[in-house]
Structure formats: structure tokens, C-alpha cells
Length: 240
Image 1 (spheres, rainbow, N blue to C red):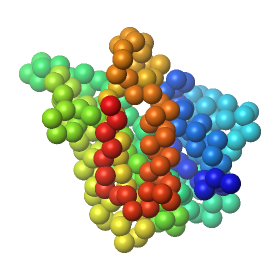
Image 2 (cartoon, rainbow, N blue to C red; image 1 turned 90 degrees about the vertical axis):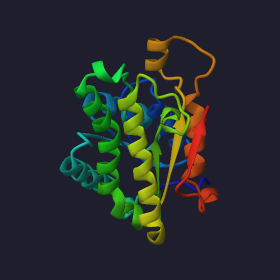
Image 3 (tube, rainbow, N blue to C red; image 1 turned 60 degrees about the vertical axis):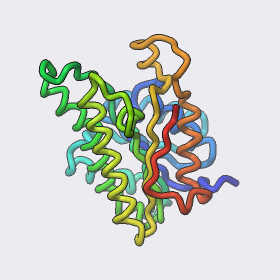
């Protein structure tokens, strides 16, 4: 029996079909996890949960704006109420919510794009983590963040200052959580992929050789949230 059997795994950004969150949810479900799917779009997150339930898995859908701290707290309460067998404990929080956008040359960039990138990546990760920390402590759980190869030292951030900056903020948040929560039994790590082979990326960028497959991302997350990674915290895994 899988170590995820019956454990509650919370995933943010599981809405649009063909995205990374969809595959990550599926692979955790296949290993026995009970899933809480979170997204800003009600119709889409409900559709993803319906697909999982139709396949015989346990999944609930929760819609709301995770960049709002009060809304994130409401959703966390809703999730734990919907999964009473978890007894208030979360085994893993996967912070996959976010998005990509080019800034272009800084002098002609749109300040609204800067704010948007930080809202959908850094703010959602912060508010979701803050809301679920008590449950992660109760479950001695793990949280994983999505950064980007562009936010790593030497990464190509040209024309994408807002996106790379927001992902750098996510990495700093991850390190802070790893250090602050170590004594409370909560681990925090991050993945930093190049472009993932999602429906949206293929549509906008076309086919190319250096995509990271969604299944590969999910495999790394399954490891980071497992007992095998019990001494891994504060780390960034680049996927290229």
C-alpha cells in the first residue's frame, strides 16, 4: 500500500486542462492520496475534480483567490471540513498556482504586468502556505514551491523581469519556511523547471526539444513529499 494512502494532499493551480497541476494530481491520486484541488476558476477546478472522482479517486474542488490572505484562510477551513478523516492534518501542499508573462525591456514594460506576476506566484504561495501551516504541522508535512530556471543564478531572465523576480521571491519564501518550520517538522523545497510541456506552452511556443514533461515534474514532487526525502528541506531542484 502506498505511503500516500488516505493522506490529504492539497494542490493549488489545478484548473485548466492540460496543465501541470492536472498530471500532478492524477499521479498523487494513483498512489492513494486524498486530494483537495484549489484554483481561482470554479468551473475548471470542479471539472478536474469530477474527472478524478469518475476514475474512482478521492478529490474535492475549492475555488477562490489565493492571493487574498482572508480568502486563503477560508479555503483552508473549507478543505479540512471536506476531509474530516484527515483530522486536521495535511501531508503535502503543492504550490503550483502561477503563470508566465513577458515583461519586455524594462523601460517600456507595463507596471501592471509586474504586479500581476507577483500576485499570481508570490502572493498565492505566501497566502496558501500561511493558511495551511497549522495543518502541515499537524501532519508533519511537506510543501513544494514552483520556481523557474530563469530565477536561478545564471538563468536567462532577459525580457521577463517580473516573472523571474516573482519566482525569486517564491524561492526566498521557500527557504524561510524551511528554516522557520524545521523544528516543527515541516519541510519545504522547490522545483525550478524550464518550460513544462503543457497545453498552453505548446500552443504559444510550439513543439520543441527541451520541454520538461508533466510526468517528470510529478515524479520529483512525489519524491519530495515522501518519507524517502525526510531529510531534504530548503533545496531547489532544477528540471531541464
